[in-house]
Image 1 (cartoon, rainbow, N blue to C red):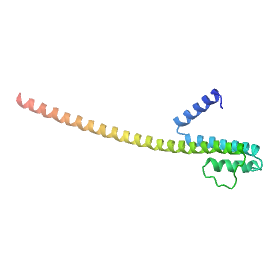
Image 2: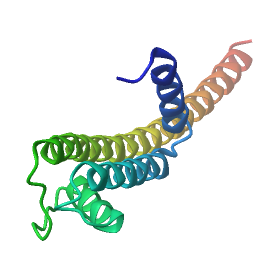
Image 3: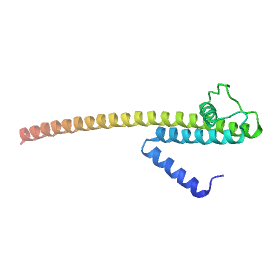
Image 4: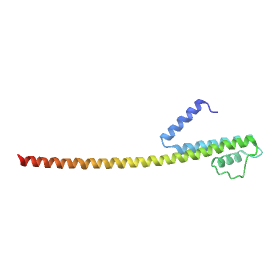
Length: 147
């Protein structure tokens, strides 16, 4: 279990990445880091199924991507537990990535829509001001004739 300090650090880094719209590189890096770490761990806890660290990393990355080729699979309980954690992390990553990209598109659409709305509003206000000036000019002309 990560400490509160590590969770706060991770939460702050995530918040900054979202605010700067740099989520994808951040998520890709974290996922790669998790894949490499899980590959090393699984090769240590299940050396029979993962004789090399490279095999462990290959399996971890494939599992994180939810592809799961099946060319290498864990058969020990510990290896399977690592697999379950990777599957959950991979599905969560893909869901978060999808939500982030969708949010970026919606935000861009809203921003464009708001800019268009402001431009239309400004144009309408200018037309209204012009019509009011015309009415004022006409009233001045009528008042001048009445005098």
